Length: 251
Image (cartoon, rainbow, N blue to C red):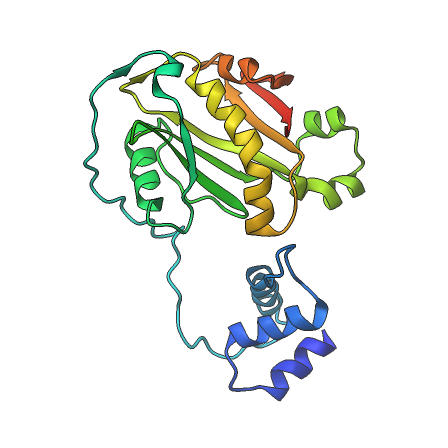
């Protein structure tokens, strides 16, 4: 508290962004890829101000919040000709990581229009993928930071609360999986899960600076059977309230 108060007093005209970044540097609050944990620190400062423990400088600007005001996905114009054939007939299937690329709007548009949960902006570490075959998009997948606490997962892995805190970043959650409705290709879904398991660790290492060792997801058993995960050698770990939890070691 004394450090934060001295910092604010020494820089009365500074922005809140400047203060939070100075604190991150002083306390070595960094992600594995070296990026400052600026948002976490900003949240701490706001909480301290709300408690009356510090007084921050006035806001210099109000940055846009993509979660509070999600952008409308752009109109799509893609080939919707039915694709019904064997998996070998559309090989090679290409899995492209599209986050922060020109293809990211395509991912958002497809998820918004064709996934039953729609599109929502992932929070925390995440990567987005679009699968292409014969030059056409055929599927989309999203992988995000794992939930903080899942009892069945923690028991399955066998780690303590301290181990979970240290190692949670090594697990990634498959939060979205969409095969486009006009695509009818047997085994495509499990094939994409296999491609993801082989591709994700290196992409994650390049993007976030740390490895991955486990994949996980949840399956709503009222809507799906999870057959593609079984075919890709994922393991059923728990069943609770019609939600199946499944996991797989990274290849």
